[in-house]
Image (cartoon, each protein chain N blue to C red):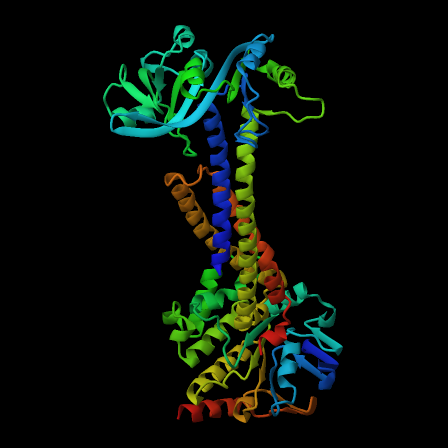
Length: 245
Length: 379
């Protein structure tokens, strides 16, 4: 039995033009990711991690190459279709949380549902469930300013899950958190992966990357290593343990 | 940022209020002048309406009035002399418009006498020194006392007060129709002004359809009587209800044009300010746009959001402007500075214009926000 591919990237290039100067950020990058996989992409800053993430998240298009997401060729899609994919198939988690300021946790989690083709009738129920799931049932009416960093990141996870996406795309999710909160967030990702969701985490923290089953290393816009983390279950457990201790 | 829209909308409201007020003022004024649609006046001297070019034209005489009276279709003819003079009762005095008129003045104007009676043909024939007072000079000279039978002095001549005109009250423009006194034309000619030429002749035709035709006839008679050559200009001018209407409308239009300019410029400036504020706020809210785009907002969703906000801001300014405009119009009306009439139309207009300003000046920033590339907004 073959596991279906959710992401297939074939020799993608990304070039930025800045005042006539061309910068090749990604050079012939090819990745294929199975559904339900747990990937971390590591690399020093400037290696093209973030650019790769924007392409994976359908926030920007590659200059050349093909990207098939869940059977659809993304480079052929227009803005409306890309928006729909982002809305339905991808959940984003950011380092800086990117919650709407001055808006309650409840309404922040509601955002993706507002942009559904049809806002579901049970939207409020779903938002409540998502917030209960990340343990914030007592913080629903709090604005981001009234929440701690760990709590804010949990709100963003609830937001990313609200539309039940196949892929969770996390950009340095623990970057702004202390180790205890970081461990909690990582264990949430572990649970989500155990449920069968594809998780892609971009990080430069080796402790975080060890949670993944597969670790990709990016350097100067190219993939320099692609290793399977044989004992990823153990490292997940030990990471959580050391953090709690 | 709402200030520009506010001023624009306020000026618009005032314009409409003044427009409405002017219309009712003109109608009011014409009614007060005793002009029915079948009557007109012909004034001595060339010029336009009440503004004679030359004050010393002496060509209009009683002969003209008699000739006009002989025309077919003419119902009443009132020859008039007029001068502003000081009238005195013992220690009280005032200055008023003194008219020398024929007794037909009263049926022509249909102005009621509340006390005493109007002078008649006998007074006219005998050049009696009798005077009918309007309410304003009567009140100034006699207060609440009955003036009938009292002697007052006009210039150097003593007159007996025989009648008191019904009070009409100030018009909205501040013109006081009650500020007048009437004496027999013959008395005026031989005893008071000591001149034979007329100031004007009022003509009432038998039917309003005949006015134009009658005016043409009057022109012919006057040109012939005054011995004007074919090439010479008229030395008289007509005052008609339409003429007055046109004149008042024109003079108010100049003011309206200015206010319209102010409101256009203000709305334009207000709109541009809204646009710039929105452009700045887009930079501040670039993260928010990015987040919304990440979670599925389409370009159209972002456009709608910013357009909605710009319309809201503009409507806020519009609401403030409508309040200010309403207050200004009311003040203008109550202080008697300008005629103003408050109707519901300008409020609808204010609402419409606010929405339009919001949409027109919101579309550029909204589109700009929507077309930001999502990967750049989220960094």
